[in-house]
Image (cartoon, rainbow, N blue to C red; front, side):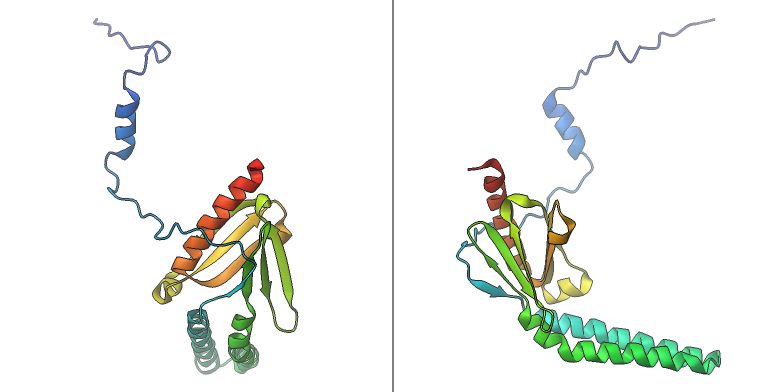
Length: 197
């Protein structure tokens, strides 16, 4: 009977150099990483900035699609399954969606933000106005998200997260360039505020 020596995992040493282990991480992966298009630092001048009008078009298309889905569900429920009561909730949902479409352009014009020396201020709302001030030093995460329709219109949503859940801010309808420049500026400024520089 032949016995083979199995190496003990504790006795083995890593024989790869750091350069070789780095190459192992990149083997079989994509060759190029997408990088931000803009690294421009924005001025902390306290000037109000608005969102893109393309946000309104994107939201109108989403709400119209919602109306089509509501109408189709009501027709199927009413005609195919003979549930006449389905027209009542469908009508209510359709009225709410139409009211949203009417108010949407004014709501979009009411959204704004300004970069001040120590914080970013975000405002929104028509009847119930809300203004939020987020100190740069309290930011823990700055995130950009955009769905397929947002990408088609070249807009994105920038989200800032702090330790307190009530002070998190989402700025919708930013152009891609503005979102990336704002993200980079917020990260740079937040880093200096946290370290006390």
